[in-house]
Image (cartoon, rainbow, N blue to C red; front, side):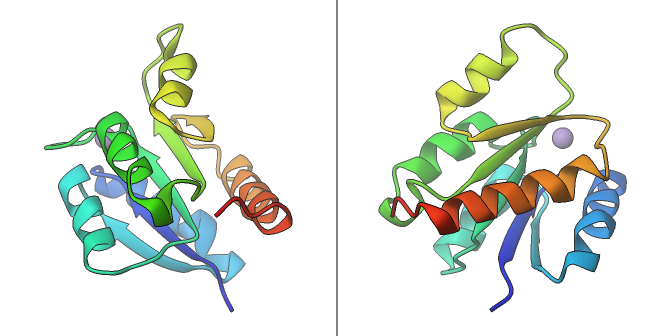
Length: 130
Ligand code: MN
């Protein structure tokens, strides 16, 4: 069964870059363009194996999306990779504090992205916590 990845990104160009980097790896790609839509996708019953989450999003930001997802039992341990352009020191701490598992800075490194996604999916498969 191919793994399903929810990509949450409000910038169309970045969305395209992420999709092009992940598509060759055979994943099923779902997309949402803001935090509200991301939560709708989940509330509509989608069960992604991993979430790639932009932090700076309209309506509901990535920190809040993560906090809300972590309160849903089925999503308490789904890997979440935060993507952020914030270049501020202490950001990683805030991201991990919100409940994300990993962090990828923008601009997206298109070789690092699929590597990290594969690593996080493998880790979850080896040691399922939910
Ligand atoms: Mn954004």
